[in-house]
Image (cartoon, rainbow, N blue to C red; front, top):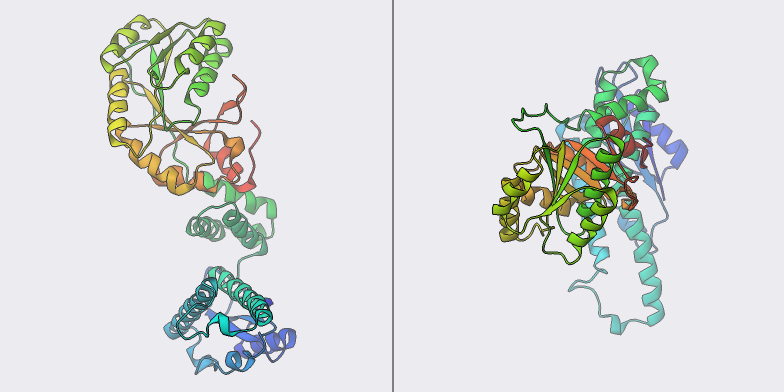
Length: 415
């Protein structure tokens, strides 16, 4: 199957170009007028766009496909609301047919398979797969037909963002923002446009506000999150960095008394790093542990992992966090978590009032687009990312520009 978009100064010119390249049997999939002076018009006057497709039709269905007439009054309708409705109707119809093929074409009017020859069934299924693929390709193309006359670099940037699982509307907004503030010379500069794309992505990522004034010397940092996201390992990394690299006086408090081995794991690390550690079994014990470390520069609080689906467990966790009164509460999310689940985690963990987002296991994530949606939608600034198990090496701070570059490149940026 071939799908191609044609743009010309007149409808006649565009149609003739389509027929020359695809032949008289080409099917008009969509069409529209690009108004003079519009943000996507680079001709300086009204232009016309036609998206056409041509492919081998399944035997026996050729007449059925060709019997569908072209849109009435094609030239007169171009640029009007009727044309837009026609495109929407075409897309809806194609998707409906594709859905029917997905279900194997099962309906009450279809003859029983028992009455058909097995060889015919195999051939029919192959034909159906071909048609289904064709319809999907057309529907996929129509999905992006609203991004028509962009410079090639911006078209590729848009496709790249979508491939990296940035939400389509978000990707379109970013590309349009870059387009609106770039002149003709800048449009021809690929490096400039890509830098602007990254800058626009960075603008979607919230920044941490000023630190709150503290009456106490010690800064308290708590980590919260679901089970299995690596909170204890991350606490060990942070404690080691602040003590061994930054030269700060550090204390550890573990409230993770539920998971077998969690306390011993942290205690072993604390002994190796020569960091004092306290264990609290209930919220009322937290103030006593904090007082023991009141002379410390920084206190890290490790908490028990809780499922976001358990309201009672989250309420219990909130009591521990409230008792610790942390300056920073980092919600730890596994970077490879799907967006729907990650959204639910952030929503449900609001009960513990996180003010930072920490992505663990970044090395396990295939794309970073869903993470961009998460921080943008919930307005939580990024603090750290972890990229492995090594203590304290596989963790680092990350700012908006670095994270935006990662989203666009589809790979971890080097520190």
